[in-house]
Image (tube, rainbow, N blue to C red):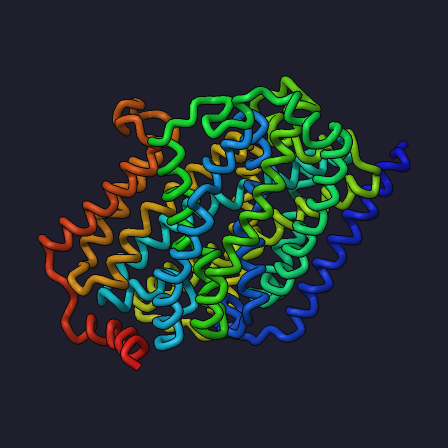
Length: 499
């Protein structure tokens, strides 16, 4: 028989999920039957929708579960390791990359973050290669949300809803929001979900803080290493600075579902203003989740491996009233779902618009708007199914999966930056950079290559250097596209910056 506490928790979660479904339904009612509206909301998102969309879609289970899990073992130094310079580097990347991609999307009606590569180089090849790399890393990122969803349902219901079913429930709802409401549905639910995340963490901080005896009592129970900048584990600057600056910072400029959110903004001014808002929102949320992770090491010592990912719901069960446990679970689901629907949209858009559609054109077929829309929605379902199978396999901790995805995205930055800022960039340079760097990142991530090959740095640093060197050297050795095509793209920027 299900206990009354579990019933109350499930009722609160059900109310939250019903609210998400309602917002998705309202977005579906106004969705237009074209891929532009499906994937970019016809570039109509205002400041609130853009800011909360990017904030929410970046927190994910990584922020609500991976970060406190890392802080549980590392102490407050986890803030520097995970966030550090990342929040400011990410904001800068939104402007440096996102602004120019938005201008090209507006000028040439692009609907995916890699569409412009085909136009820029008069070739489908860089568009194919970048989209495949984006999809590989994006699916890794999507898996994080599924793992988090399964864990939360299992923990807060004391196993009544098992891991596999919890992940399936959340994936089903986010898939429906993406399928039915498109980018507009994703943005509208992001506002609701982002506000919920912040709202539940504040009382949770208060509850755990008081339960542990307050400021001085908490400090007395923590070892000096948990409070110091050095951390409980060795925090080598050659590791945490590249990780923070590159993997969790710079990568944000080209992460597909984030870049699409920038592309969906109603104007470049919205992108600019969000560069001020984003660091504040991210800084506040990660301070709270990392603090809870550190305090969790006092309340529940001895957790190891993937068990550390459960620290936030475990603290809620230990100290909070039952209704608060339900709200915390809803808040974590909000973090997961703000990302999942956007990720599904971004991944499926690249499958349909950057792979299937160009292949059809090369074979002499022109897809109608109706068929293009059908392919796009079909791939949403395909990606959802593949994601769920990977979630069941649960490859590693949330942090480990996230690090691989972030580093992979960061290696795409040189290709984006060069294509947008350097007229001498060539298609071959972009392709070589991505094709050679991607497998090497995987070899470092899964520790196939020996540790000495990174020279003591986090592998994101040599990965970025390799990707940058390849795009520059190979471009210098090969011929760029015609001057007419280059000027066609760069004239879009010149008109804006000269006016």
